[in-house]
Length: 192
Ligand SMILES: Nc1ncnc2c1ncn2[C@@H]1O[C@H](COP(=O)(O)OP(=O)(O)OP(=O)(O)O)[C@@H](O)[C@H]1O
Ligand SMILES: [Mg+2]
Image (cartoon, rainbow, N blue to C red; front, top):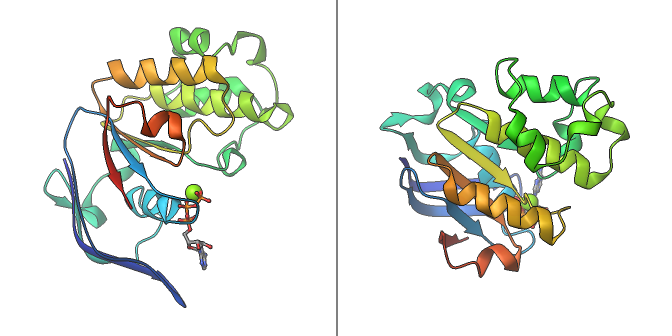
C-alpha cells in the first residue's frame, strides 16, 4: 500500500502539489488522471524516487520512501521512452527488467519477436513503448508505474495493455490524460 499524506512539491517558482493525500491499495490497478501539465509526471517521479525534495510523508507498506528499497520493488515506464532505452539491443533492454530472463509471452503480446536484435534507438515510437511495456510486465516487482503508457499505442495495443493490467495482481499505477483509460470504468481513479 502507498500512503501519501500532506505532500507538497514545487519547482523553484511553481507550486505543483499542496497537502496531497492519496492512498493506493494493493493489488488493484489505480489510475491517476490530470490535464496536460497538472503534475502527473512530477508525481510519477516522486513515487519512483527520482524527486526527493517533497514535503509531507510518503510510505510504501509503512516504510518511508527514503528507506524503501525502490530498485527492487518498483518497475516503471517513463513518458519519454528515450530517457529509458539505454542499451544496444531490444533483447538487453528486456533483460534489464527481469534479471536476464526474457518473458516470451510478453514478447508475443507486444509483437517484439522480429525486433530483439535491433538497436532501440532505431525503433518507431510505438515499438519503443512496447519494448518498455513488455519489460515492466516481465519484471518481478511489487509495484509498477506507467506514465502515459498509451501515448504511442493504437487501439489494438491499448486493448492488450488494458487486458494485461486487469489480470495482473501487482499494484499498477498509471498516470494519464487518455480518455480511453479514464472512461474504462474498471479501475479506481484519482484526479490531480
Ligand atoms: N524541472 C522543472 N522546472 C520547472 N517547472 C517544471 C519542471 N518540470 C515540470 N515543470 C512544470 O510543472 C508542471 C507539471 O509538469 P508535469 O510534467 O508533471 O505535468 P504532466 O501532468 O505530466 O503533463 P503532461 O500531461 O504534459 O505529461 C508543468 O507546468 C511543467 O512545465
Ligand atoms: Mg507527463
